[in-house]
Amino acid sequence: MTGQMRDMVHVYVTADLPIRANALSFADRVEIRFGKAFPVALIIERAALDRLAEAIRSGKADLEAADQRQGGQ
Image 1 (cartoon, one colour):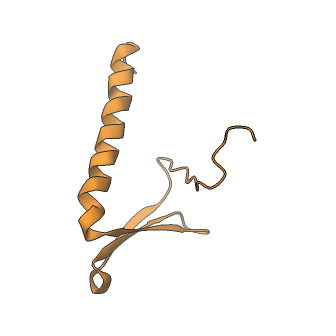
Image 2 (cartoon, one colour):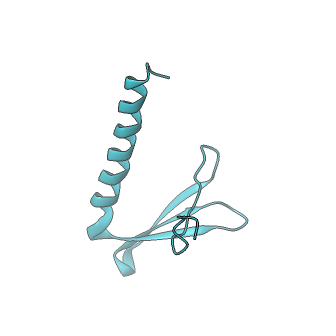
């Protein structure tokens, strides 16, 4: 084994990748679709939305802090 996590799905999100959100009110969830031709969907329960948003904010803050340590970009 090369140290890679084989059971993890990776979705590479770029600035130009279409991203659409759709409320699934009947299921109390939000669906976020990435891409067009071969879309990937992330289904998030309402109770997990704030946690997901915080994880994204935290990751962005970490990247910005790394930029500051490296002299900015």
